[in-house]
Amino acid sequence: MTIAVIDYGSGNLRSAAKALERVAAERGVPQEIVVTADAEIVRRADRLVLPGVGAFGACSDALAALPGLREVLEQRVRKDGVPFLGICVGMQVMAGVGHEHGDFLGLDWVHGAVVPLAPADPDLVVPQMGWNTLAVGEAHPVLDGLDGQDVYFAHSYVMVPADPADVLATVDYGGAQTAAVGSGNWIGVQFHPEKSQAAGLRLLGNFVTWTP
Image 1: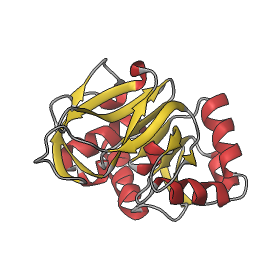
Image 2 (image 1 turned 90 degrees about the horizontal axis):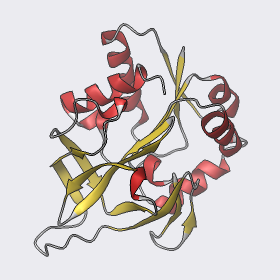
Image 3 (image 1 turned 180 degrees about the vertical axis):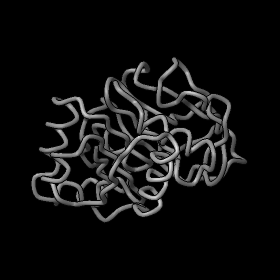
Image 4 (image 1 turned 180 degrees about the horizontal axis):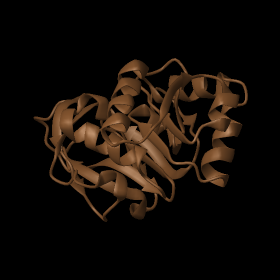
């Protein structure tokens, strides 16, 4: 079994890969963790992880610049049902459009937009940097045990899905802000599991054993 951590020049890939290796070993699930930009390796992988940091447009463009990768993602995730995890901007590019320094098209797996984080409390700064408490809505296997847990955020933009049913978890940051989205075999989280200590490792462990 192989987990492909997709390398499109954005994100702390080694930290994510090391965390996945650790939880796979702890859960007794033999997995090969491969960091790759090769669409053919992604095509053969059993699970896919898309990390991301930086601006939506730069990440979306970098993803599109890798030969064949978007087509492979569509095939493997949307048609073949391979488990998929998007992290931070890797979650945001699942949206239809991002409005960060312009208008940029995403994968459109989640109908909706990525917009500036605008907390109602003027004392809250943007970006949100640091720990916040998850409120998990409807139960989801990847989020099992995460309700009420603190996880680590670093973002200035937030996804607003058109369908509220796509929102799996929120945090309170001057109002409810999207923290996790998902449907079927894919899930995305705005926070960084690899920086979220025990809670983040639990999420990654849930992912490597998830059978949608």
